[in-house]
Image: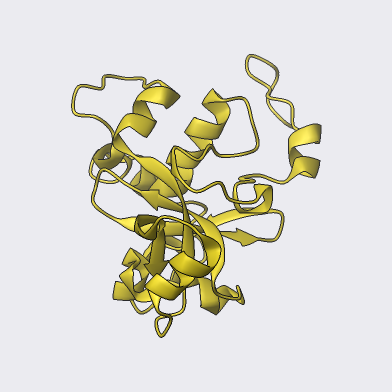
Length: 177
């Protein structure tokens, strides 16, 4: 029941291409959704100065307030997570029109959308589900940068290496006891 709301057509389905049936290829998902390497800056920062100082394209530099999480009170911004700005981050740009940064937290990434942040019993949002499918399709713990700047591995590591090294799927095996 905890995943029901995430798996609905109106939730995760809003990120899928219209022609998709019961399954989707990870590559097809990144045709309609992107993981963009960006530099997120403080709202008072001058983007032109950041572009000039770091010699990066301006289209990949964004003020915190321009992220979708800035529009909702309960959705955290990178600075709310203690991330010093400017910061190179992976920002999800989704088919649904939203743009949320994936924030390094603990040993992995957490989406900054409001879905989980005001309801702690929710285990993941549709953006994290999409990220898990893309990472699984690449057989990697790292999300790809599909557009934009290269960002540090820490900003792309979707799941903890310690957990990934111990995980073994139990498909077709006896249930846990």
